[in-house]
Image (cartoon, rainbow, N blue to C red; front, side, top):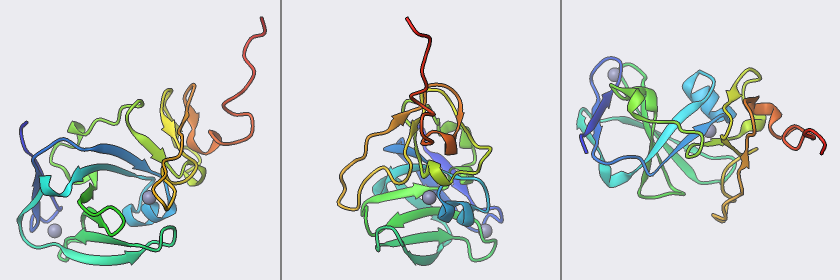
Length: 175
Ligand SMILES: [Zn+2]
Ligand SMILES: [Zn+2]
């Protein structure tokens, strides 16, 4: 595949990835809302070996997750403040890239059948999920790593309403 490059807004940091993402997560949690200053994080997760910094040295902020108690390392530009990627004590060998930092962010496809939408219960009220999206009220896995089952969104729906009582199992036409 063609390598995909990205970088911060001031240009001091550049990176590239040499493989497609292992998975794509859209995280609506409050931490990601704060960290991005926006509605949610579009997070393609790569094998750490497929990610390399090609210019500059990112600064790092180590955050202890209140959910897992493990450290999340935020890699960012000390000059302009742009966050580029995350690494995780909990998932060593993986890096979650801030999709907007790619030069061509559109190469990261957020397909309903592949992308997992996390923390839908605290998503911004106006954030809609498309039909077929895989939604989770919180994380996609328990702290011991056991995966939770996704709820598949039957029709476009505000993320916050996917887990409201009766929202997804609404009665259809009667036979
Ligand atoms: Zn910068
Ligand atoms: Zn998050």
